[in-house]
Every structure is written in structure tokens, then in C-alpha cells.
Length: 321
Image 1: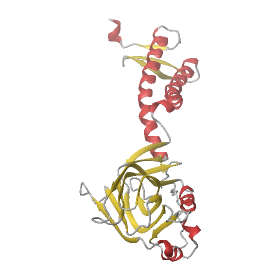
Image 2: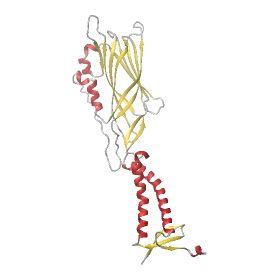
Image 3: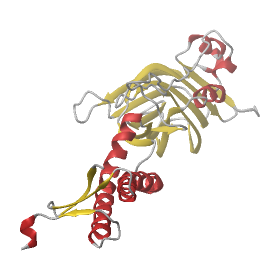
């Protein structure tokens, strides 16, 4: 009968027994437990240990204005009239043709950007719309700006970026400046998926379709935003401050709508690839495995050292004297 070494104590004392023995079965069980216990612990503690299927990364999107906008304002009724009037401006020719009687006040638009740290990425964007000869005071307005915004940290992703803002004016103006200050924000319904070795899936987005030859209903803010929201994620404008500055029409004629938008880092949630999750799992498994292996080894020392488990104990002759 051949004996195989089953356990070594202090690197000198060796315990042996046959392959078909209770001692061998016990040692194999301990080896299996030293591997399985860390796996079970990591799986059980994963919701609390930081191992997850997604990760939030902060990234500053790369933005670009497409030179497309829609502005519709409501003004107070003219004298001897009961219904409110409109002021409408846009970059879409068909919309302007259909709203021709309301576009007389539109004059100029300006757009410029600021790169504060010279890294080639826009940090702040400005949009300015100037109205002249507004017939009566402005009551409220709706503004739509069409942008392109791209995330590039893990893969190229381009969520829709139609920035909308509706404002009922606290101070009604026919002349002066309305200044809006806000920031670009990412609204996300599900985590982004990027390609990795073994899988070539990537989150897809639906483009916002604007029928430039359609009716004015096609340019309605509600219908356009419904297209935007039918996506896994989209960018939106969050206005935080609004300022009103009334000026004299004799010295500074016209009404200016000025938007200042900060483009900061936004939190984006990504699904982790299989390889990233394995990397996380391995780190936690290695920590638990070291503890588990040490405990199992000490347990075998006790069982073999106290002869609870029978085996041949081979002691070097020097240890006998």
C-alpha cells in the first residue's frame, strides 16, 4: 500500500496515509472548503463590499452647438385686444415662414464658448438672442437649443442633447435683459454598455427627428422632448439663476435673452464588463482565501497533532533527541 503525504507541520513533521483513507478525504474536504468559503463570502457580501455590475464615472462631455434653436414668447395683449400675442424666432426656415407675422421682432443671435483650462473642451457656453420692437411686455417664453454632446471615457457615446427651458416671467419686460445661468446635466435611465473583448454591444440612441418641411406642430416643444426622453439617457439644461435687468428704450432699445451654461463633469453610470467584474472579484477572493487557508491549516495541525485523525507521523531523528 502506497502512502502519500497529507499534511506537513512546521515543515519537518509529515503526516502520511493511503489514498483511500478517511484522512485523505478530510484533507481534500479542507482544501475544497478553503477555496469555496471565500467564494461564498464574496458572493454573500458583494452588495456591501463594492463589487457591483456598474460603476459611476465622472466625465466632462464634449459639446458643440448645431446652430439650431426655437424661441417662442408670449406677450401681453395689445390695446383693445383680449388675446395674448406671440414672438417667435428659429433657425428653421419653414417654421419662420409659418410664423411670419410673429417674427418681426427677431434680429440677431450670438453663440460663443469659453475654455477656461485650455484643454480643448468647452467649459462654458453662451447663447444670446436679441429682440427689437417687442409690441408689449413679455409674459413667458420657451427656448429650445440643439446641441451635440459626446462622452468618450470608455467608448464614444452621444446621448441626445436638446436643451429646453420654459419660463413664466416674474418681472415682465418689453425692454432690457433676461439672464439665465445654469449647467448641462445628464439624465440617465439605464447604465451605458461599451464593447469589450468577447462582446461588441454598445448603447444606442435615437436621433431627434425634426421635419423641416412640417407644420408648426412638428416644432412643438412637447413632441420634440418626447423624442429625446425615449432614449436610455439624454442631456438637459438645468437653470439655477434668473436675473431681470430693465433698461430705458431710449438708451438701450431691445430685449435680450442671455443664457450662460456651465459644462461641468457629469456622473455617468456604466455597466462593468465581465473582465472588470472578475478583476474586482479576484481582489476580494484573494483576501478571504488567505484567511481561509490559514484557518484550515491550523485546524489540520490540531487534528493530526492530537491524533484525532489517524495517520503515519514521520518525525526527523534529530527531533527525538
